[in-house]
Each structure stands twice: as C-alpha cells, then as structure tokens.
Image 1 (cartoon, rainbow, N blue to C red):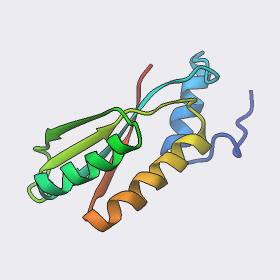
Image 2: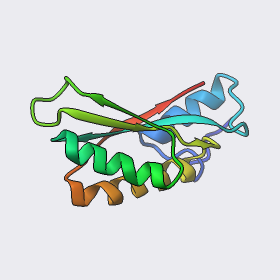
Image 3: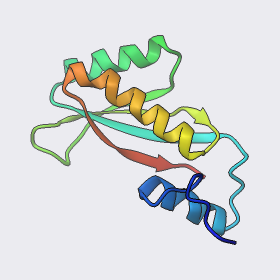
Image 4: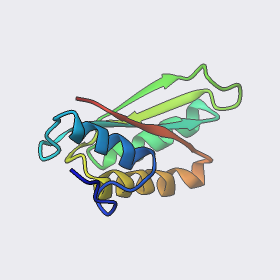
Length: 112
C-alpha cells in the first residue's frame, strides 16, 4: 500500500500513524491519546489543569524531573480517533491554551 501524505504527512505524528496502520492497528477505533505539557511552576500547571477540567478533560498532574526549569507536567488523555487532523488540532489547542502560562508542549504518546 502506498502512503497517502494527506492522511500520513512526513513528520513524527504522520510517521507514527502510518506505522500503526502498517502493523494492523485499526485507526477507525477511538482510543486515549496522551498529550504532555510542561510548566515552570506548580501554580501554572494547576491553572492549566483547571482549564482542562473545566472542559471535561481527563488529566494527570505530576512533578517532572527531565528538565531543571520545567518541573511540572500536565498530561491530557482525550478519547479520539487517531487521525492526523484530530491529533494536530488537539495539540494546537493545548499549545494555544498553554501559551499565556509559558507552557512547553512535550509530545504525543499513543495508547494502544
């Protein structure tokens, strides 16, 4: 099967979705996908978490040890179809919502 670059662009998300499809994963099934966002303080992370909770999003809030400046992590767990458009749109929403709080997007992690 040839790769449709409109569905699976040549970037990290597109590559991951393409590999999932190639290994037989059904991308027509909704699933939780993790989106991680980092913050420099507990208060900023809590403020961001409150925004997510007000929008009925499942999340986790934990200290982050991978960076000396960004010490708190909020992970959102939306339930969605794993499409490029859905993932990129949600990522953009998180980045825009976190910008006033000096958030740094830390990645997308796929849950099988």
